[in-house]
Length: 256
Length: 256
Image (cartoon, rainbow over all chains, first blue to last red; front, side, top):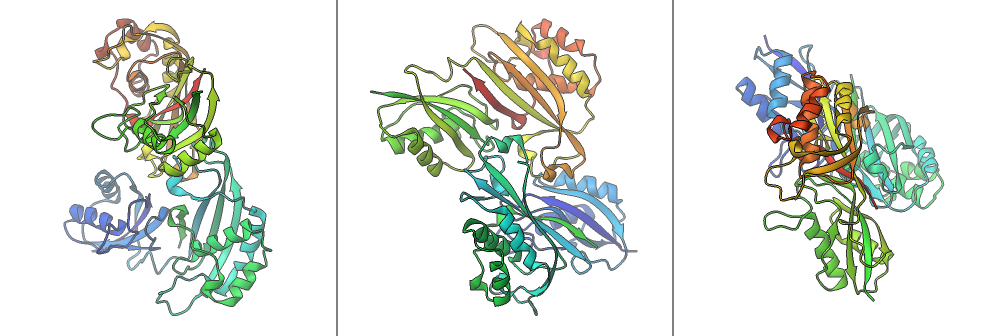
C-alpha cells in the first residue's frame, strides 16, 4: 500500500535557485528528490507548500510525497539528513492520510522578512537580512501594514508575468517590529533588526517582498501609513515600491 | 608624518584560508591589504592581534598599520567597507600612538567556541558551530576548564610543528555554559548551544580547539573534571583530546 509522507524542511537558500527543480541552477526540490530516489530506489516527485524563489530561506517548509517503499519515517529521516548537505535539514517526517498534498491542503502560510536597519550588518547575519542604511520608522511601517489585512486584490504587489487567475488574496496578520538583535555576534554592529511577519491564506509571486519594499519606503520617507491603502486600491504594480531582495525572506510556518 | 592606525575587524572565516596572507588560498589579511593599497596607493602591511586559522571567525580582531596617506579615519572606514566583501567588516578605525603593534601590544585575548549539542544544527548557524550529537555534561566541562586557569605549560594542547620557544601560557578566565539559543531560526532544531569562553594573555597554535576537543570528551564520557589536570600535567599532546574543528571558534575580543 503506498504511503503518503509529510516532511518539515529547513534550508538556507543562499546559493540555490529556489525550491523548484529547474534547468539552470540547483533547486532545493531536486536536491531532496535525488536523495529520496537514492534511498527508495526510484524517482519520487515531491510537492512543497510554497515555491520559494532563488536565495529565499525556509525554517518551516512542508513537502509531501507518496512511496511504496517500506522504510520507517525515523529511518528515512536519519538517512536523508545523513545524505543531504548541511544547508538543507529535514526537521521531521510523518505519515499522513492518502491524498495529502502539501501545496493544496495548506491553510495558512507565515513568512518572516528581516531588515537590518543601520550600519552594514555583521558578517554573521548578512545572508539572512536586507540591509537598509536609512533610518526606518517602524511604527509607521506597522500601521501601514495593517491596511493589508483582509481579502483584497493585491495586483499592486504582484510580480509581472504571473499566470494566476486572480490576484485576490487574504492576509490574516501582519506585524512589523524591532526584535532583540538575534545574536551577540550580530549586535556588535550598530543597528536594529526589524522583522516583518505576515500570515495569509495565499500569496502572489514576490508579494511579500514587494510589500516589504513598499513598507521600507513608507518607513524611510516618513510617508503617512494611509499611503499603503492608496497603493493597494490602485491595483497597479508601478504604484508600489521596489521588490525587497530575496535573502531577507524566510518561509516560517505552514498550517493545515 | 606617518600615522599609526588601529582597526577593529569582524569576519566570517568560512571560505578563507585564515588570517595570514599565503600562497595557497585566500587570506583575510591579503584581502584587506589589497583594498588598503587601492585606497592609499601603495602596499601597506598590516599586523593582527591573532592569526586565526582557516575557517575560524572573528568578531573583534584588531590590526594595525602605518601610513603616510592623509585620509581621515572616517573616510578610510567608509571606503574600506564599500570595497570589501560583506563577509569582512571593519568595525572602527582610530589613530593611535606611533609604534603601536596590534600583535605585540595585546594584553589579553578572548576566544569563544560554540558547540551545538543535539540533533543536526539549523542550517542558519551551521557555519559557526561544532556539531556534537552525544549529550555533553556542561557542568563537568566547566569544572574541568577551571584546572587550566593560571600559568601552565600547555604542551598537551599544542599543535605539532609549532616553532614557539616555550609552551607556557597564562589563562585568566574560562567559562563553559549553555546559552539561550542564539536565534529563533536556530532554536527550532532540538539541542543546546554551549559556549566555551576563554581569556588569556597568550595562546599556542590550536590551543583553544584542542582544549575544547578535550572538554567535549570529558563532557561526553562523564570523566571526572580532574582528568583535565592530569592531561595538563602530562605535557603530552597525545594525552589530550581531538582538535575541535575551526568553524566553532571566534576571536571575540582583544584588550590592550
